[in-house]
Image (cartoon, rainbow, N blue to C red; front, side):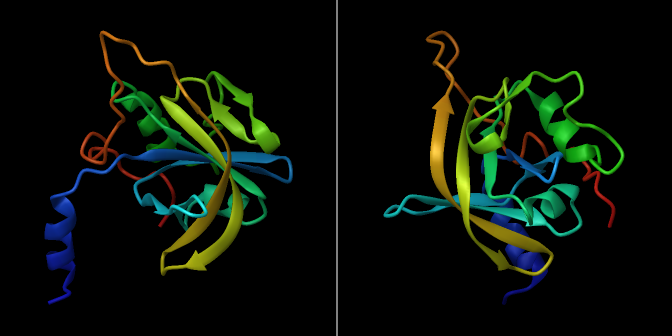
Length: 167
């Protein structure tokens, strides 16, 4: 009971969405692919994203006041790979990528299926990841295409991506 194999078997049965989380603070911007995230409260509405302590985005997020959380369309595996496999310490992940400044000075990916900006309410250490508890302050969902309903990229879709951060 409670072994790594047991929890691995349990999580293998799920296929949650993956997200790109972007942070901007102190003249830096960063973004990473996140597999650990979920709405965690209805009243007030809150969402938690878990960032790896080894990740450059985590280091930028520690001093940020807001984070942007993006759902990617299933056909944009290239964006998931860019934000999951490249290391921000060595690469500008936003170069040649359509993005704009969003609410509260956040970085918004133009090709996202949907996004929201959250005020960082609190942070919780969970081991090798830290949870950022977010209070949503703005959100946007791309208009639906009647011929091709929106399907977000999932953990299974991105399972071939090897993390680019060190460690």
